[in-house]
Length: 516
Image (tube, rainbow, N blue to C red; front, top):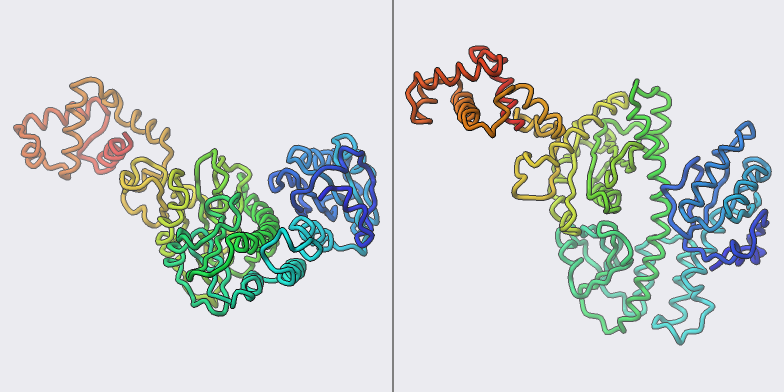
C-alpha cells in the first residue's frame, strides 16, 4: 500500500497538506501512533506516523516541530498523519518542517479515528483477503473473509487461532512464545506448561509465525498432532497470527516509550524526582499502587537489538505483576531496564527465582549472544526506585564480571543483589577499571607481579590472610620456617604501608588481592 492510496479512500477523508509524487508513491510497511517529542527510536523504516500533536503547543518555537520531523526523516518514516482535534488544525510550522525534510503530511479530521487509519493499512497490507480471488490461496475463501473481519475488529489470538483451524475440525493447536509460554490455544488443546512448550517450539510440527522477529520475540504455531493439510495453508494461518502480532507490537512500542519516560525520572542524576511527577509516570505505565517495586537491568551484545524483546518475554512469565520495560536515556547499546510492580493483593512473588529458572531457556534462543542481568531488592515506595536502579546496575556489573561465581560455567548470568553476600561477590559489582585501580594503589609496589620477589610476597600475603593471620599455619602451608613468614610479612607491611595486626588493613589488602 502506498501513501497516495490513503488519499483515495473517502471513508478516511484525509487532506494532503504537502507531498509530491515521490513522497506519495512510497510504500507503507506499518503504522505507529505517537505523541512523543522525539519518537525516532520507536519507529521502523517505511512506517506511517500518526500523531495527535499533543507534544506541540502554540507557544512552542519552530525548532520543536523541526526536531520532531527530523526524527521522522532519520527513522525512514514515509509520511506524517497529523490529527486536527488537539489544535483545531495542523500548525503551519509543522507543514513547513515536513516540506524541508521531504516527509508527506496529511491531516486527519476529528471524525476519523486513528484506529480507522491503522485498520485500513493493515487490512490492505495483509491482502484484503475477502476481495482477492481464491485460486492463489490454500485457505477457503469464507475462512479468509472471516479472518480478515476478525483482524479488523482486533480479536484476541485465541479466537483467531480457533477460527483459523475450525475448518480442519479444530485440532489441538497452540501459539507459543520463544520460551514456550502459551499465547493462544484452541479449546481442544490442553494447558501446556512453559517447560514443555519450550520443547515444542523446536518440534518438526512447529512453524515460525514471524521469521523476521528477534529470537526472543518469536511466535510459533504448534500442532502437536499430525494434520492432513497443505503446508501452504499452515503458512497462511501463520501470516494471520503474524498480522495480529504486529498490531500487538505497536502497542508494546508505545508502552516502551512510557517506560523510558519513567526510567528517565528515576535516573535523575542530581536529586530524586518530584513525587507527583513520579506518580504520574507510574500511572502511565499501569504501576500506580503496585509497590513494592523491583528493578531489573539486562545487557546483551551491543550489535544485537533483541535485548528489549528478551527482557519483555522473560517478564511475561511473572504472575500478578505489572511491568514497564524500556531503555534508559544513558543506556549502553544492547541494554534494557524494567520496573516490576507487585500489588498487595498478588501476595509475595519470587521474581528472582522465577527469572533464574527461565534464564537458561531464554539464553538458548540465541546461544551465541551472552545475556546478563541484575536484579535489585524490592523498593518499598516510589521514592526508593532510584536506589533500586543503582542496585540493579551494580548486580548487572557483577553478573558480567569474569570473576563472578560460575563465570567459567556459563556465558550468561542473572545476579540478584541479595546474592552478593561475600566480599569477593561484592567486589565483582565494581567496574573492572575501578577494581584494577584500587588493587594497584592498595598494593603499592607489590602490584608489579612481573618482579619474582613481589610474586613471592603476594603469595605469602594471600596464604597468610587465607589462614586468618596464623603464622604457624601459613608456614606449614608454604613449607617455610615461621621466621621466614615473619620476615616476608614485614616486607609486605613496609612496601604497602599497612599494619597487618589491624583488621581494617587486613581487609584492605584482602580486597586488593581479590581485585587483581
